[in-house]
Length: 166
Image (cartoon, rainbow, N blue to C red; front, side, top):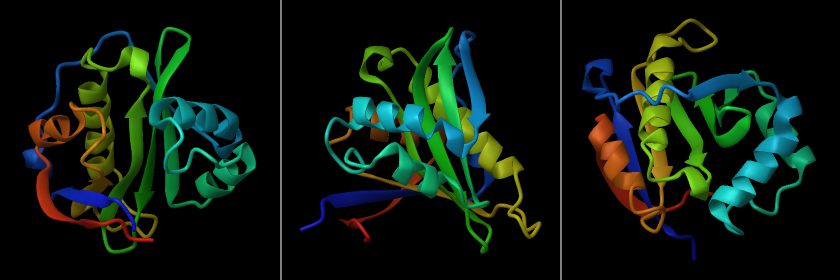
């Protein structure tokens, strides 16, 4: 049976309540060639769950479509997290994956990263030029204890609890 999931959404950019900035956090968009780093970060963040079995080649395939964009968060030279964002033709934007590696959790980095990615999702139109009308994500109840409170603090609202869609 698929794990229970929690769906959250933001339907207006004015709902975003940004977290305080972490001055040393740098967020860079990366190409599918960063798949080996994304693969390593995913395994470090989610420790043998979800996409942990994916190879770098599978990650490169996932990150290749034009409606998918990916960012790596860094502190100094250290990659500390990543986000995969997907633009949908209906004006919706999915935060497909976002996370921070365990040694950097609990320092406000996740709040800043979610804030930046949500802001960027609102500002970036779909490939057909349609403006963003909804930013949404799916998570599980047993993520890091700060995960769901972070999303709610940023202005997301819970819309549904249910099983993960395959």
